[in-house]
Length: 129
Image (tube, rainbow, N blue to C red; front, side, top):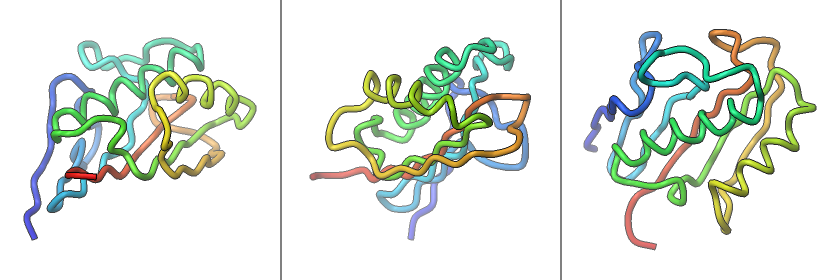
């Protein structure tokens, strides 16, 4: 088993004791991303649509640093502080993903780091289809 730490300056620095992603053989485990802008480490805005887009941009940057793309994500976990925001998740995912969509879960939570309204983590598999 080969384990590699993935890091990119194009996504926010870890704000705790974790890596942006870990690659084990052809599987990449992407840590949760919140809507921080990497250059400022500040939330992009309070708007849920903008927050979701920033999270997906952050996941894209980490996926690319690992040698993949969002299309390589096989499992996506979405954490929301308000499940009423779920239709916006679907709208934004349709812009960033195409079929076949990843398996996913949406989980309502009481709070997220930095008072974010959304966080997403993922599992990505690299290699030939």
